[in-house]
Amino acid sequence: VAPDGDGLPISSGEVIGRLSKGVGTPGSLPDFAGLAWRMHGDPDGPQPWDVLTVSSAARVALRPVAGWPAAQYSTLMPLGYRGG
Image 1: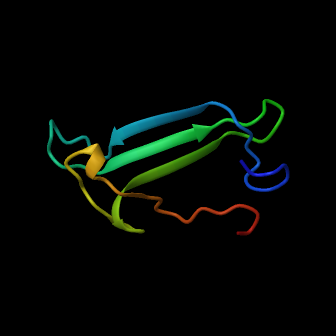
Image 2: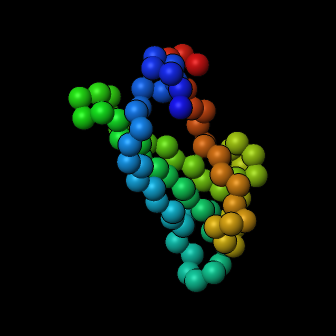
Image 3: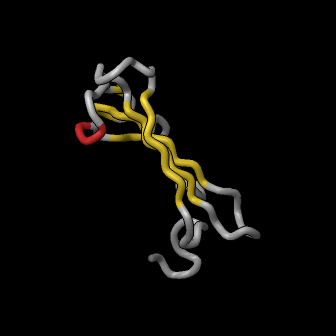
């Protein structure tokens, strides 16, 4: 845990996560795996943060996978906060 004033402006709390298939191929056919989560901050603090990732071979090279454990996840856009 980062000291107060360091790190992201999100305090400890609930996280909501979701796994999804990108295209929605039937059954066990390979598809793009999606992993997303929402971090809630203080009720009087900043808005929740949503982080979206997808199975990929490199930052922008999407890779279909046959199962969740086989996936390596990356964001399609770089993450940044306060110019960093």
